[in-house]
Image (cartoon, rainbow over all chains, first blue to last red; front, top):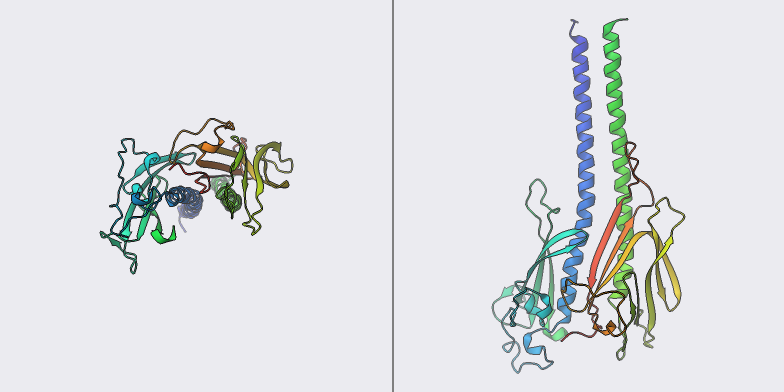
Amino acid sequence: MNDYTDLFMVIGAMVLVSILTQNANKANIINKTISIEGQYEVAATAIAQDIIDEARIVAFDEETVSGFVPVNIPAGFTAIGLEEANPGNSRVVFDDFDDYDGWKETITNSMGDFEVSVEVFYIVKSTNLKTTSKSTLKKMEVSVQNKFLVESNSNQLKTYKFSLIRSYYAD
Amino acid sequence: MNIGIITSTIVAGILILILAVTNLNIQSSAQELVISQMKQVQTTAVSDIISNDFSKIGYASIGDIDSAITSANSTSITFYSNLDNSGDNSIEKVTWEFLTTEIATTDNPNDKVLRRSVNGDVTDIEIGVVDFEIRYYSSFGSTTPMVTPISSANLATIRQIEVEVTLQSSENISSINNNTPTYVQNTWVKRFTPRNLTSNF
């Protein structure tokens, strides 16, 4: 034993306590992050559901807005996209399902800002895969991002995707 | 007295203090997490009931309901719907109302009664609702809510209804060095597009 024994023991104790405190703080931060992320995920889901609910109510296609049906199905359906002018990027003018294609907006509520974007496309009945041909099935994909929802160990925003397949014959 | 013993005692005191504070923080965090999870479960329970009711505004299994919404305010709404999808097409009168009655059994002074009434059968929801707001929109995606209370002439123009519910914990979770009351809070916002409100097309 030399004169520095006490000092070494004190340093050792301090190191052990520091490690313990650091781990405890890390656990606290992880707990809070998980809790907050859970709330924002619920909010993101609600926003995507809002868009999907809304899009289910409008007509399947521009050709069916008036209640009439095209002579040739599905060839008589219009191409994907908005037919009307929409300078304000507003959903007010949307009157059929695929009008939502390409729509993007920052939706703000009491939880903060959510970046929402929508893609609509025709899909193949047998595979549910995207197709450029017209079919009686359209798929909507709603993507939602929020600055508090990031990939673990990086600052990259997580994208939450929600989808709906709509059939012309199910309307 | 030996200087070494004095120093050791001081260092040991500091270490014990650090351990005690760390332990308190861990306990506080665990408590907050448990309460937060409880609140999330309760928020989901309330949101499920709201979603069930609001999506069905104006629904009738046979025919239509002429005036689906009979009153619409920022904290209350009354509407008609065949809520239970009964075969005899009986229409229920449903009212949601955020009362100003404080819940006396909790420590939180902000929580109030959220009342759901179906044909006069009253259910008081007393699980820490501190805010319940309803906003009405006359077109899809509109960012400007209609002015409340909605006049009877404008009730038929409602297309979308946004509901915001905020729940807080019954228990104060403020730490020992913070005297300001702090409650775990959970907010849920959803905009409904009831299919049976006349579409704007």
